[in-house]
Length: 504
Image (cartoon, rainbow, N blue to C red):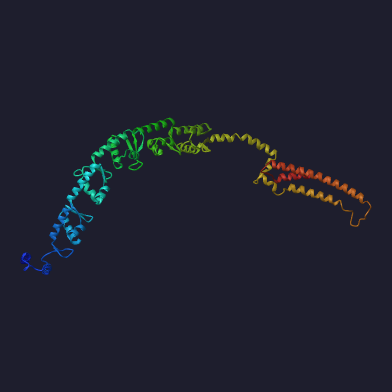
């Protein structure tokens, strides 16, 4: 191996002497190519061809040229541009750059670009100058300005914050960088604005009115609330509906609600919501979690009103009377609310709850009062029971058909009996027209007979009309009696009695 290396040195010296010699002793280009080709075949040398094939370059010299070009470019150069400048294939450039990164940790490849640590330091200095001028920067702006990935820039900038870059990032959103001066200025403005507020206000209103940075506002307010510099609370998290509620307003709300509850014994949801409380039920449950409240549709009732209702029920049960609980409840309560309150009170009154009844949702009546009302009808029912048999009311039966249908119902046996009698009288009257027999002799008494017949017919018709009038009067009287008692009809015994009277 040593002999081969000595031979390489000798050939290189001969090659150099040949180049420096006069044109008579200089090798031709063809000879040089053949010599180099032979050395490459023998693996005595390692060279890289240029893209045009006119030059050879060693890997060590290529590495030196890459570093020189990187320095000239300011610490950041694209590998494609580097291959074009050095007239070397991109494959050899990428291979050699990867070898440089493994040996030199100050270099790195980002998006096909070779970047040195010196470039990152100069980049941080430029970012610091821009930050000091504007007071606030975002990684989106920096990415557009330097055409680098935001993740890479975030790593580089966060590593140099406090040293090269004099600023701070938002703990909740690390995409924003602020200077100390910028933070202090807005902190004073935010503290002054929130200290003067006496009513709830949305932070979005402060942002639009005073141009506070949204990403900085939430962190400053949280910090001042925790330190006690601001007396208030944030409601809604970090969203557009986040509101700041000062403690003075909360105290006034609590004072009003407590006063209303102590005076009236109930709370109306609409009144509580008009104070600015978005969820009245949740607020009342949280405020009076130890009280036994009954929540209805529009109000909640306290133990005081429940005690009044319970006392009224006990009085009803003890005195055997009745009462309506609506006068005991607030005016905005409905009958449904009253029924719910009664059910709650009855469930709490295990003893004596069965001695009362509920009528029409809000009226409570005792069982003793019901018994008293029933006993008050005993004399009347006794007298009625004694008089009804005498008036034959016992023969009247209720019917399921309405009174208006009696006109179209089938005729009763009494009406049929009267109709038969009428037909019989008409037949008797018609029978007087015939002679004494089939062979009767005609006489000259035609006019006399006709006169008698006319007289007889008139008399018969008069009798028939009188009978018909009497029958009509009876029918009308019977109809009036039936129409005067709707829903009743005569039984069998009653009809038999009428038939007996008619026959007599």
